[in-house]
Structure formats: C-alpha cells, structure tokens
Length: 178
Image 1 (tube, rainbow, N blue to C red):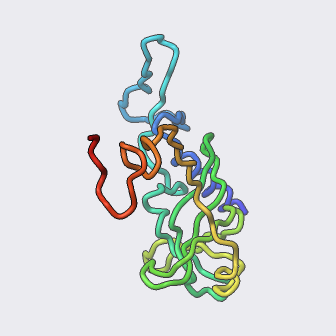
Image 2: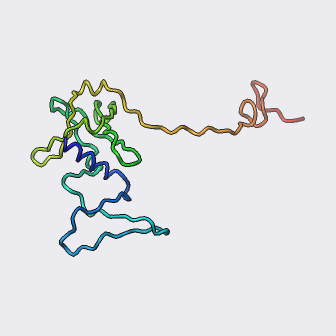
Image 3: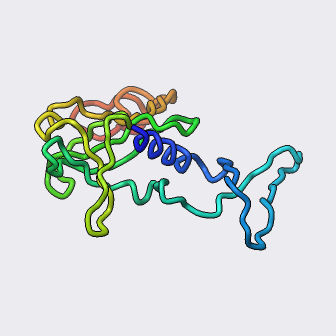
C-alpha cells in the first residue's frame, strides 16, 4: 500500500508542469547554491527547482510503456497514458490491452490504487500488477478520450444548391443574363 501511495504521489508531482515547486528535503553538504527564486514582473511568484530524481520517484517518460501483469503474472498490456486533473492528481493509468503491436488494441483506464509494483528481476524495469486477468481487462469498458466540440459555422453558402447564383436549371450550366 505504501508503494502505491509513493508511486502515485511521485508521478503526480512529475506530471504537473515544470512550475510545480518542490523544496529540497535536506540541505546539501556540498557547496551548492541556495534555491533560485524566479520572479515575474510583479515580483510575486517563486519557483524552487528540483535537482534530481529520487529512487522512489518515476518520470512519465519511463512510466509510459511499463508492462502490466495480470493476476497470473503474465503480461496483459502496458501503460499507454496517464490521466491527471488540473491540480496534478493522477486519476487513472490508461492500459493498452490486446491487439498486436498496438493494432487492434483497446484502452482501459484504472485508478492508481488498482496496481501493485513488481520489482524487475536481473536489472529489468519494474512492472505493474493488477488483480485481473487478460479476459477481464478486455471485457472492461473502453476508455473514451475527451474530444472538444467542433465549432459550428454560422455563414451561409450563398444560396440554394451551393452555387453563388442560386439554383441552376437541371442538367445544364448556369445561364447568362440576356
């Protein structure tokens, strides 16, 4: 449970923009400079920089593509995306399941607490495990990505039939005024 919380928190912190501030936990014994404060023209904002990744933190570029294992410890998919809200809180991990090399696969979104971290063996990358098998995951509801509504046009086409001169007599070209 602690690993799930740590991973969720770490990924959430990393998924927010570079402006997300995090203070160093302990001062360094080396001769490093103090945190640099970035100020806007109003002088009101401050940014603390993060110097390095810790062993219990994941970056999204490494997390994406992580193998997902089923309850039988067999690979059933991989992380194709991460869904988070505007505050940086991770809402779901999107798992691509089925298909071959991404063709014919579907995406299913699961809450972060659905996963357990399985350490990689012999230097391999960590994997994520869920308490479902491949059949259960392929039967799950598809994840639907948000698509903003398309703008509607309010202009007219210039007349009936789509031609600038209005309707044409059927079967022939537009007639000239005589």
